[in-house]
Length: 181
Image (tube, rainbow, N blue to C red):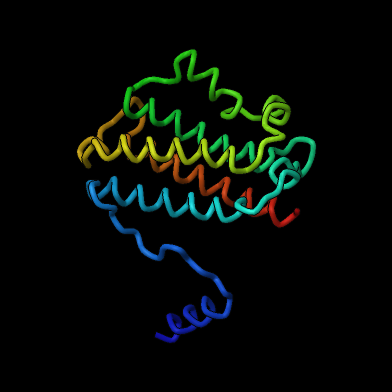
């Protein structure tokens, strides 16, 4: 009990605020898929908080010559999620048109540093928002039995867990970058 009280005091004193403090199944989703949506949306909102107020210099900021800008990272998150949409719902990788649209964002590097600049953070966030809405619409059509099914070498659930952990990793990267601005 003393440990719990100490944790509560630390949280209160640290001024940490959480827009969401539970994993709640949104209406219209099966239990396991709904929990995943809740976690994905929670992470996305935290990613957004790191970049929401970036000006153009912040959006294009490079920590060093091998880094990716916050704008490019947001595009990368959208591209990764778009890939797992076609992988889990259609059992395939990107076709030629999709690869043309997303490949640079998936791989980033020098090509990404050259291509993803001079656009406001809202440009990248709109792409991310659109991809997430499609993910949610698609997942709403599935149930927990589908979520557990194997799809190649992973279950659909693991694929979406990977999207979530990937997003969390880049959230940390964005936190580091924005603290350096």
